[in-house]
Every structure is written in structure tokens, then in C-alpha cells.
Image: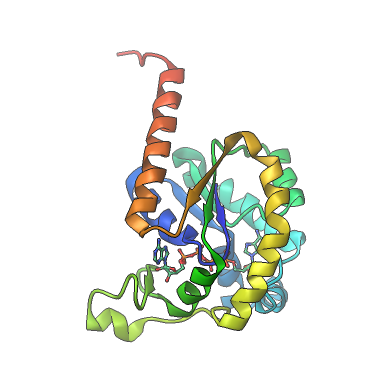
Length: 216
Ligand code: AP5
């Protein structure tokens, strides 16, 4: 699991992690934005909360995440959960469905950096890649011309999301104390990734060793 304040770099690190470890990236925010885009009743309701930077009610989010984690690809490859759980009740629900994380990574970034990251963030609707006008600019003019901005990526809205994050983070941490790793997410993205990479490699080695020798 990967967690952190808005724009702490969760999505950016997930892109790098899934590329190397071939995990299924399940991002609660992406699932919700897809629901909003498809115009369903749940999507319309979710958007009201997302606009205010508040948590979308559990009756919408919990089953959405559970269903995605239960799909065959997540079960076969393993999952990387981004932006969930954001409350104790979400963590408890996940556990009751039998989903237990191996590690909980928290990206810590000072607040003054977060606003600049949000305002400069752009998304490529074709590849899904995350850019930043200053820190990760698009590679070509063609990509630059098609970039979009999220409806909640304004200075005003990120401050609301930050208040929500700050009021919930300790509750969530209390559920994963023994498997939590806190990292400085204000470093350049490849430096953050290199730390995550060593943690995951070590974890993987332990898991493989625990399986014992594979029969020829
Ligand atoms: P969500 O989409 O999860 O938004 P968020 O938590 O606010 O996080 P972001 O997606 O904004 O940031 P990120 O950490 O992924 O940063 P990124 O890598 O893009 O949730 C949106 C809303 O949905 C919530 O407000 C809530 O309403 C609802 N929701 C979601 N989950 C929910 C749940 N479980 N329960 C209830 N409601 C829920 O990076 C940001 C920018 O910084 C990019 O431009 C990137 O290029 C740049 N950047 C990244 N890393 C670096 C670096 N190291 N150095 C320089 N720039 C960097």
C-alpha cells in the first residue's frame, strides 16, 4: 500500500513500481474519477465530495476497491493499492475481506511543496502518464498539446484535501504500525523510487525464500 498527502507522489511512484514489479495498480482516486466520467449515480454523488476535498462515503468506495482487488489479474500478479484506506473503517473493511498488505509506505512531503506540485500537474489522457510542467515536463510537443488537468487540482481544493488527509493519517497509521515505512517524498522522484525499490526487492526475496526450494 502507498499513502501520503495530495501530490506527495503516490501515482508517480506507482507508475515506476508497476513497471518494474508488474503489480496491478489500484488507485481509489482513479476508480472514482472513472465512475464520475461515466456519469453514474455513484459518480455524481462521489464528485460532490471530491469537489470539497472530502472522503467519498464508504458505501461507494469500499466495494469499488474490493471488486478491483478481487479481479483475476490482481489475484495472480499481486496488487499495489494507492490512496486506500483513508480511515480506520476502510482498513477494517479491507481486512474483513481477507486483503492484507505486506507493507505500508507513507510518503512525507512538506505542505508548501504540495501546492506547487498540484497546480503544475498535468495528465496524458492517452497513456495515463503523470507530468509536471516544471519537474516532469512532457517529452514532445504532441504530448504537451493533449495534456489535461484534474477538476480538483486547484490551490483552493488541494488545501481542503490536505485538511482531510491530516485529520485521518494517524488513524490509518495506527492500523499498520508494524509494517509502515515512512519516506521523504520531497526528493527527486527517482531517488524516492530507489528507496522503494530496495524495500520491495528485500520483501520479495524474503517471500521467495519463505516459499522454499522450487521442485525441478
Ligand atoms: P486521489 O486521486 O487519490 O488524490 P490525492 O490523494 O489528493 O493524491 P493525488 O492524486 O493528488 O497525488 P499523488 O500523491 O498521486 O501525486 P502525483 O504522483 O500525481 O483522490 C482524489 C479524491 O478522491 C480525494 O480527495 C477523495 O475525495 C476521493 N478519494 C480517493 N480515495 C478515497 C478513499 N479511499 N476514500 C474516500 N474518498 C477517496 O504527483 C503530483 C505532481 O507532483 C505531479 O505533477 C508529479 O509529476 C509531481 N511529482 C511527483 N513526485 C515528484 C517528485 N519526487 N519531485 C517533483 N515532482 C514530483
